[in-house]
Image (cartoon, rainbow, N blue to C red; front, side):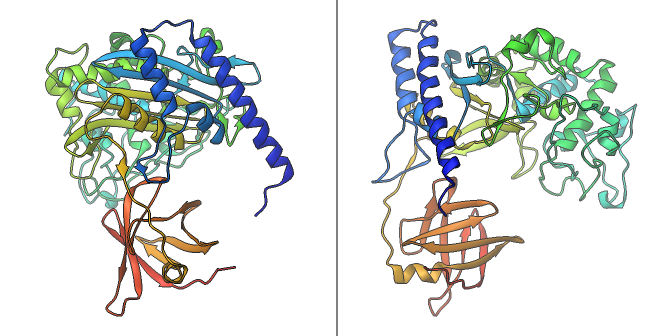
Length: 493
């Protein structure tokens, strides 16, 4: 399909503008002076973006080029090395119409990173013996009660379930509210009553059975915290979490304080400014935090130091280790995810609100990165993280080396068709000598490393085709689950 001429013009203009802004922001960033060694690290990170796979045909990119490629308006990064913030830098526009550049002080919506800070707050209550992780949540809810029904199968929901996404609850995320909308109360959100724009938070399967993401569960725990402390959520988080951590530029207030207006990044969705510049999220524990990468680094560093035995500003080492322990196999920990790279563990979380995306990754030995963008495109994050990991020599976090081979056209035809995986429909098509995997609205080019094995750059996993005794393709497997072939499609033109 040939892009519309106007679209080509817009893409060209976007590339030119973002490239120009990148250069301007680099000049602005020179007001912060770093040592020659740190400046070298900055340049290396900026010039060596890469994906999780490196092949004989791939090369690394510069950050300014990838921002233009992904149409990202603004980006902010902060780097942790040896338990210290080594550098922080902004790129591009905080608001293009107002000609405000991103600086390290620019505030972005932290979306689901809010859950990590909320986890710290809840564990503080556990540490103070005001809350037990394994007690029925209705013992602590005073202004509202969770309406158990037969779906829960007479099992209680605990705070541990809420924070580890194992409570079996509905509502994975929240769309936010325009700044001109009336904001619902927490109980209206939980009951799905107007002006709430989501349905009620209720059981969809029994608690403790498996992990299923639920922002709704975090709203319940937000109300629990308020009922226990008798404080507003933003006030409690400021006095007991943000200020003690030194995150003094951050806040949970919805709407933001007036004195922060000139520091707020404007959200951009599909390259267009979000209505009213940003949305509001009364679901504060799930998505309400505004922050900077430097402030979020303070949370990451505190977690690292506490995990390694230092007396924390908020939590004891024992509480921190428990917070970073997955509740059950294949489930998150408490407001944070644990990922294993080889023999090394990292803790992480990511998030996306309307017009904003963000991510942090921390090692347990004092390294890490926080990235925030006023965009809805995540793809550059992986590339930045691998660049940082390479420059700072993160353990077991190097890109995988793979040798891509060419598969004859006659063999490619055997892969084309429709597949079903856990009720999801996938399709493989062939065009101009290449094969593509269609998954929802995603289209990924397939790269072969053997006659039956392939990968896609966009998802960090390996794929392998399966065949029967006659050699016919019956499906393919990834992440331990088989996609079964259901029919053949001939789409070669």
